[in-house]
Image (tube, rainbow, N blue to C red):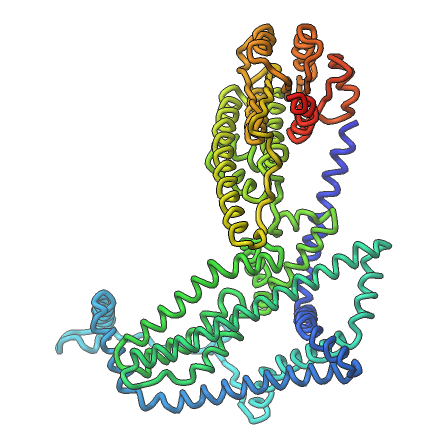
Length: 639
């Protein structure tokens, strides 16, 4: 019966792979049509908020669209005109610095001993080769030379080579230039027309898209479209803010470099180079190198010495490292829902597929793929590969680190979880489920004795560290609350305050008994730690103790409450044996049985234990703490 399912799975995977291949091929061969369409969609995302704002002000939609588009085209024209004039001005000034430029190039050549040696060797080799191939006419007088064979005469078998040279005319030159410039102009015009129509009929286009791909799932398709648009808008907004700040820093830095190291010369057109950085950084990875090339060339050619040149290099290096390594990975990841590695892979893929335009559009296009993978089950691998959310829950991540032998990273993960939520919650939702996975794999034979021993020993150390961290955090929070109360200030938001503790004079003895193996004892250590922080007098014993010794311990320790700890997969059998032994000796003992992470109907498990009708069965430490609190109330009342 399993074979058809397996074949079906293979068939569905083959269909997905084949469909992916066909989509990539379609994207490649249709790039001349799809690139202008993608650029138009991207620009419509940028301009839609402005159009919506003008409509809320009271302008009709056609007027709002035309005003926004004209403003955008005008800004691009003004920027192009200003930058072009500055380039022309710089080129006009270059002849005045030819002497300085030649001096610097000569200094570089004079200090390049290695390259100079290579150049001399190449020249000597060329001279030797020329001497060996000199014609025989240079032989000494009086020597006889062989007669030169006559040139080969043309024949039918050996015709003369013929080359057709087209005569260049003014019409040919005009057609060549027209082909060079009309293509980009036509693409720009097509993008402009598409943007206008998309802005004007954006609701109608969205409805048609929902009708086309929704297949009756209106709510799901609407969520996907809204999320894709929101992510792209956040990314473009974050990118615009980062680029603007980057450009301002470049302009200020170049101005300061010119005044500090320019020896009386100021750095020309610093605002233009800052604006150029703002624009070119919209192109991932290579845009900053193009934008930085112009200031670097100017710093090398226009200023005496090398101080300005190296200061300019340092400026761009510091800014780029700071922004790309510390700001962009966190900000862009949060705005797009993509990991930093996914952004790099997307840039490589779309550049290979669509060239420079693909590099510019790589992040928005990949954002759409991530959203599709989130809402389409068959394409969920896209969200797993490219998304920034953890694909494994915390308890699986901790367990994976432990079976890999990386105790330090597992502890770091748990400490990070502890900073965000209470200790009891960390134990119940992370550490106990991780321990249950280890026990299940050990029961199946996936973990050998050495591995399970390492996992258990590591968890003991982690529990001690987390308990110490909890105590330090409680002391810090208590000191902060005391200081705020002394100043009559409201409490600052932070960690929730701990649950109320028992009165100092009250003593409630809780005995925690592991049912069978070491994992039961480890969960006892967690519960013991939680109860001690609440003010209970909790004690536990090792699994090497016999059941009779555990029963005797109840009397010697004067226990008021008993909690039996049992971890699956054999939890019920072990808990039943120990619970019966305790109940036979102490019929009135208040008792709790913990079947940690147990699934299914707890009433059936309680019937199987058959210890006593009044004994509650719990599956989490929080439930065990609650039951212990309820059982402790009569003890606290009677004193």
